[in-house]
Length: 227
Image (cartoon, rainbow, N blue to C red; front, side, top):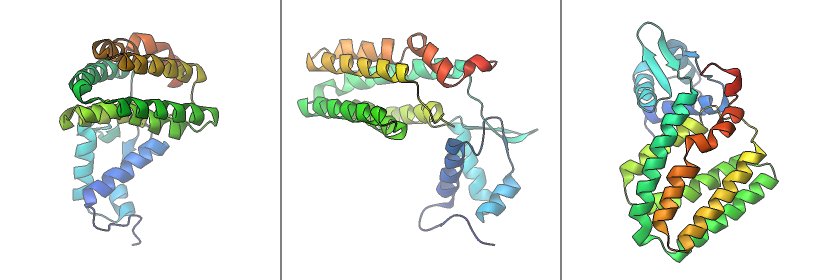
């Protein structure tokens, strides 16, 4: 049987994991769908062992649920999930910025300004994928400087769950305009050396569920769902 994956030197588990995440991101594996292990293993030309290991990792990250009576089901994001994740990300990024503050240099702040400019150009050209990637880089600037790998991995998983999990292709201009204004205010606080104020702004505005709720509801069409 012809294999769809080039196994190369990477572990089968990681290859299967990447394949399933890609399917979710593209919307090929939709929320609430059941993953047929037999068919998936045959399609990829692998045994069930690496598939099972990949699914265990996906379950730990919240992307699937392994249910004895239903098999493996792709998780469904609810509005409560967003509220919970925003609270956690806000607390973690608050902590990250405070830890990074002594190491945050002028060139780091300049890099964040440059990323903001690239995000604006991406929005103008309708390239939301580039906008998203630059936005992640913007926040990773201070997260990496916190030098806490566990924190960085937790934030990364939560953001993937919220923003890469069958992400809608369109974007809401009003939300992105507000987001860019928030970024500019955040950077200005950093320029002033007001790291505590910037950290509070991260937690209480940028990652405030109540502040972002109307955009989340509209972008993910929660007005048409029972959450």
